[in-house]
Length: 152
Length: 152
DNA sequence: ATAATATATGTTATGTTATAACATTGCAAT
DNA sequence: ATTGCAATGTTATAACATAACATATATTAT
Ligand SMILES: [Zn+2]
Ligand SMILES: [Zn+2]
Ligand SMILES: [Zn+2]
Ligand SMILES: [Zn+2]
Image (cartoon, rainbow over all chains, first blue to last red; front, side):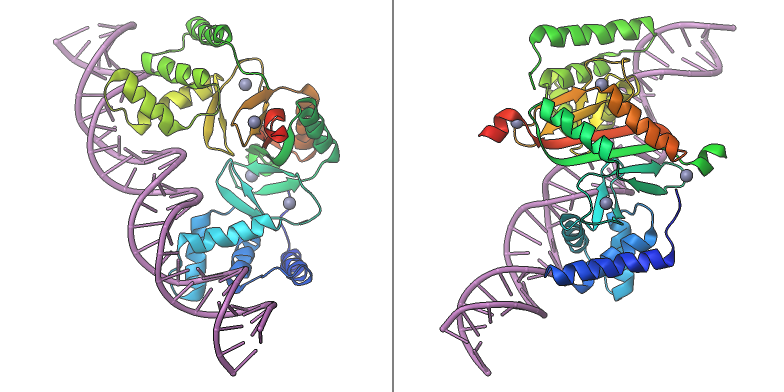
């Protein structure tokens, strides 16, 4: 459950800029700010915490729709994920590389780990097929304690 | 994605009563009412819909804490699951038989299917072990369309 | 360049989901 | 009877999210 280095964070931001440029996606100032806030936090972050930070950065109060719209854009384009079990958002460090990924979330220190496991994806899609079910979205979130926190 | 018959629903309610009796769990009137409302709905149900129904049943307004407390009791004892991706609750039809189960949720007709798949559980727990992670709770929710709805 | 169009943001208000805090009740053990 | 405990009632508010409409900014067509 390693945390991200500064260079990884910068690379992540740069990658999003590139993807938006080449796909003609409007990465506006607000959307960029929201993405940066999310990846720099490096832990699951809540919408209203983002709202506070945006307000501070721009020296004027922003409002919930501003933040939620930016989040929607980022999620739609695979740059950010929502963790439904904790109403929080995290940056994706391998956008466009996956459809389903899953998350280990430490309840104590709030650190998280995004994982991709093809065999897990396979099992899930086999189950879906077996049930004649067409998947549009998968939520797989594992809450518990990371090594550090479970040893304390 | 078959729906439950009346007898299955009754059996489910009866089973909870038995489990509570033998485990000395206080299945109070309100808790029982909430459980019945959830299983009879037979689709994911929202807390405030339960609240309305409880108020009607008892001919007096109930309040959110009443419902949320009952839900907490039912979840703690494995009788009910929360679907985090849609802020809704469903009855469990095999309580005590599992730790992790997962859900196929149709976005259109709102029907759901609870599944248990040992190989899936195994994969998840292997990932957790590999990451030195101690699981306390797993959320696996698959949204999409059921056979009927994807054919329409 | 100008107008038309689409996209994004600002703003106000409100809807939805969930919990904190404290009072009251009912019941069982001493 | 008194204490203790578990559950519920009650009031208020916290936390999360969106509807609706106004305004601004960027793109495109003329
Ligand atoms: Zn991702
Ligand atoms: Zn931790
Ligand atoms: Zn279950
Ligand atoms: Zn359906």
